[in-house]
Image 1 (spheres, one colour):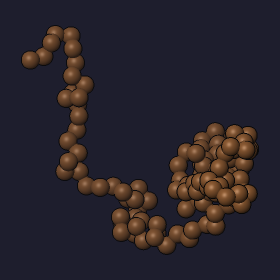
Image 2 (image 1 turned 90 degrees about the vertical axis):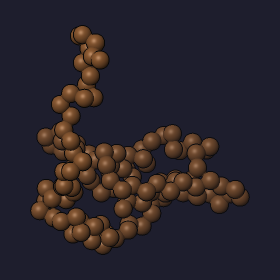
Image 3 (image 1 turned 60 degrees about the horizontal axis):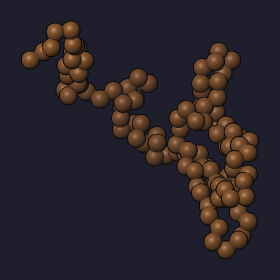
Length: 111
């Protein structure tokens, strides 16, 4: 029973997407299989050392695998974010927190 003045946002105007076909990759005119093949053919970049290993026994090392997204995007002339290869690495190199003696060695790989 509905309470007067209370709107159930979950039930109101929620389209049923259970039967909707996937649009993955179709915005670019690609079929899902084409997109999957493209992703499989991508070359892995060599891991770049952000904070090099010291060779101390028991040293901790972190590998950052960057697969895309906002963290590696840079504002363009219009202010919109766009992916820029190597941008996340350059940002991480400028983080003083990662230069701490307690911070682990750090590698980054863009995929």
